[in-house]
Image 1 (tube, rainbow, N blue to C red):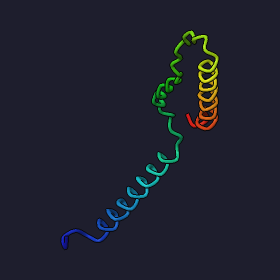
Image 2 (image 1 turned 180 degrees about the vertical axis):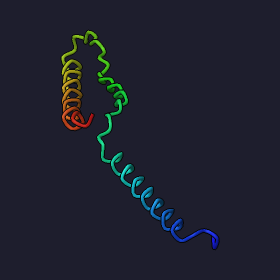
Image 3 (image 1 turned 45 degrees about the horizontal axis):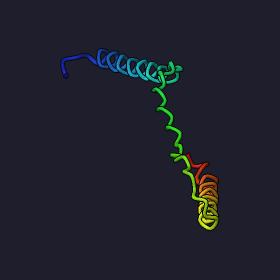
Image 4 (image 1 turned 180 degrees about the horizontal axis):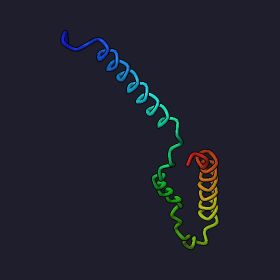
Length: 92
């Protein structure tokens, strides 16, 4: 480097600073440009709506006590299902 004159050192240093400033300006301008919106990934399929399996009722015997007990049991199950639907229905 001792054989290279000082004015060459000065010019090469100026050129290096100019190149660094130019690169910095290019990089920051690229970052500021709005990017095209990438295609959004497809939305996952909606979860299937859960439906209760309904078993058709069978004929109850003519016994009044048995019929009342079955009717009471069906009423309790219906109320329980209604309460559970109100409680957990909004969490899907």
